[in-house]
Image (cartoon, rainbow, N blue to C red; front, side):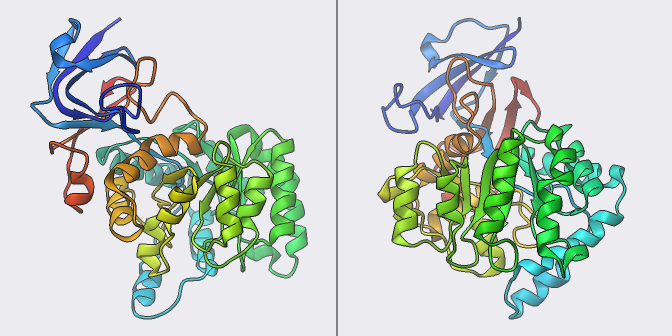
Length: 392
């Protein structure tokens, strides 16, 4: 076994309220972390750190848990620059633009799709992301959805079957037939590569009854539900997510009081995952994180990295947006981007710095995590450890 001690950490975020200052972030000043192989072995003051095989001096800089990006769409080809340019010139966003990416993805080779996925993963890792979820949803045929998940599963344990992204253009006149495909042959081909099943429950995509059928079929096949809910309009997505005990309801932009209450009551089961990159890139209404947090809901932050509505892989950028435009405090935003993401993936081994957790860490070129929001757009992540190995 090999041990590494990171010492002289100016401010360490543990997300363990039993240590340090007793806050949700469990802040320890002048701290050290000892890594043993791929796990955290010890956390505490630098002066009490046990001996280790190797030592890294953090020189007073902050260390945080690696970001947990619990919602992304990284298996795709092409981009939608023209669509973005037109939208920024006044055209509203709708779900239909996905068809452009579907055509490009179907035309791409496996090697091209995997190269794109790896490029985006490397980009995210350099910005401190150490765990990511990603979805299918840009193939919309049995073969294309299965190959997307096969490619994704080679790079993450958190692959999501999203055959129900939109109704396939091939079934434009037969939405019911497409739901049958998604819940039948396509599900059978995709389930071996996925942990999760997702559906875009929205006008222009799938209504409540269709979404229920898709999620129920996925659950029967052993997949855990999560839902694209209430992004573009008020709708049944959040209530359906809570009813089916989905791990997360994602977007949560248009919420009634009943939706907020439902998410608060289901705080231990269903996480409200907010995706501010989508609102930034579509000039849409911001989700009201303050309303959700004050009600008692569990909130996660994620990038929603995709070529159409949120082409960013930067969790620090999403933190800055959440603080500036969604009324989150810097502490809340960081917790949601780390421990909150872990909750959305129903994981206890990530999103925190505590003995037994996976050794996923990000070193900031700053004395405090608050700089992530205080200095937006600045590349503050200067070191990343993933599974105990320094990768950046």
